[in-house]
Picture (cartoon, rainbow, N blue to C red):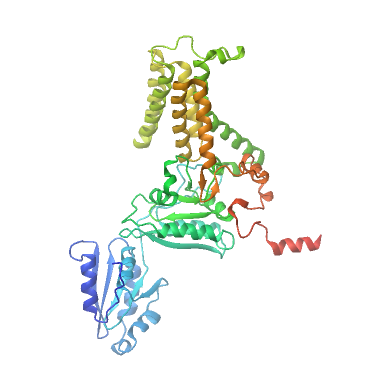
Length: 498
């Protein structure tokens, strides 16, 4: 189907070709119907369950009442321009393109003696209504989130970004799946080189299908760096979060069938910020952000640091001599931490897989019965459970699930290094993670910017929730075409008044 196949003027040839390609008679969901327009034959192809039959019936009523003389000369033009009252309609002269449109949910309408196909976009996908995000919940602000239907998601963004320069460019990926991916950006803000690079990578994807949607696309985009566990893109289910990043000069990828919008490029700091901070007072928002960052650092360092200090007690100052159990028990402390980490992961995975009604009971079993009895029978020390719990809470407080998983992974690596090499293992492991962060780049953007390379204005916005009226500059690292967010005409008038 990759080669061009022109629409034949003989309707029977077109019908036979389409029936052969689509398997009419073999698959039940391809609907074929023939009509009579004046003295000419006509036919339609559609997919059951993906079209609005009521709207198409109204369109057909306007077409089928044409008199014989009306379709004798330029019949296609008369049907298209005077009778096709639906707003989303187009003409195609390639049968392969027509088949792609049909498999996307559109309706094909053929007329005998015409070398073009009329395509009606009367899609009615099975879809759920926008509801509150399960991952990015907030106490204030909008409660709508993205869904699995691409046109709903673009509408949610368009509602918040009423800019004529907002673009949604469709790229189809997959030789068989023909998955629709909308590349969203603001034309006079976003760096055109970034947009071109992303579209080039998407067009180079050569695979039959991407059933895993956004995750499969991400792996093609990040290339060989996918073995680096730190996420190079950010996912969001919130339209307001996606809109904020579009205003800053980012690109958003909207993959059909996925409620997760991909934001790129991103840095480490994008994964530790949450929309809740911007729905609170500036001081409260900054306080929440700093507490969240502290929780992430504790999640990463606290268990291996405690283990390293306990295993080499002679390094502890007298003020910290109380740390660690006097009797480590039958199981070495390092293995206790590893077992506790595995237990936390098992409970986390189980709560995802069980029905919501049972998740509370499962959490009770994991937290009280397993944890409490494990300490009573001597499998775990109380301090091991305590520090593991702090690390788990810090990980769950991380807004980005992908970044939290990376932190958990490196925490286990640090624990193993501490078990083998004690304090030198901890120092070496932390340095290796820092070097990995230093080398990580997301579409050419340094992962630690604005810390490294240093940018004071950007760094203030990272650690503190600055007042919105003062956030007038877009991140310079994105190289936006329009660096500030002020209306220049309005600003010039205010300057003249002063």
